[in-house]
Length: 352
Image (cartoon, rainbow, N blue to C red; front, side):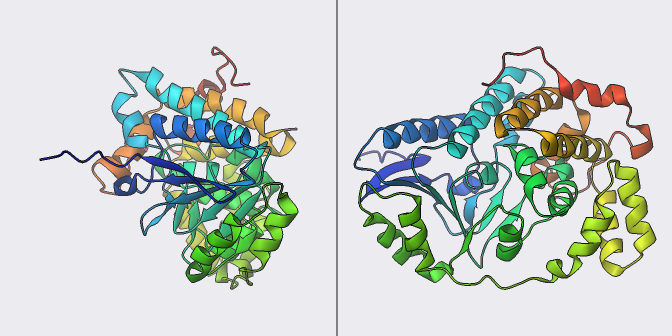
């Protein structure tokens, strides 16, 4: 009996003038691992150097989404004994995030279904970002004792007002129009039109530029429906404008509205250490001159995560035991500057 070769975790192919990168680790909701990151990097190089390729298109196989993030189970399991494995994963992932941002050809990401963490990293840095009515986008890291990475500390401060601060601290998921408002996506295309859109993109001339891609996407796109969240933007701007988590919580408490109470409850369930680190990194990202500057800072913070008990506890509760009941090591009042300093290590080779 002939053995079947398993399908690759990233399918790389050409479709007309499109270079296709199809994430294919469907049982893990296309979560990224080192081999997948390397296949993506290799495909980016191949397509960039191929004059017959006009644009790159990134999609997720399966019905559930583009990508649920990085393979945190691997980092959890290797973290204490083989920390170099997590460090290597983040290094290679962040370098790919930077490459996507500066890619020489149009880079199109279809952000259908779940797009979280590392999924945001391989989509939101692209030149053309498409969301659908099924999109559920989040940087949910404060809920696992981590922080928004993959260049999110560059992206989130560039959302209007304090919407990015709100998303980074709460980790809540958002839908299509919220993602477009946050400047994490550009166009809304209903899922029933995606197949036709991909076929149209494949007919692009090989010399097509970003404007030609815009025109094709515009032919399939429509207005994304607004959401209840957008009714609270002024409250978000007002309450999340502070530079300490304590002041943000106090502002929400003083507001007293149902939305403020709901947001307060969400923040109180997150890791205090993660929230403090996240706010510091998002504010530093607002002052930064480039994505790469933020990725360097994030990479230092990831190395500190390998000795952070809240990270292991958060992953345990969310992914390993799935009890959704993390017991955080410290409260807000207990987070010291010393604790935060472990996330600003400089004892490693730079990424860029």
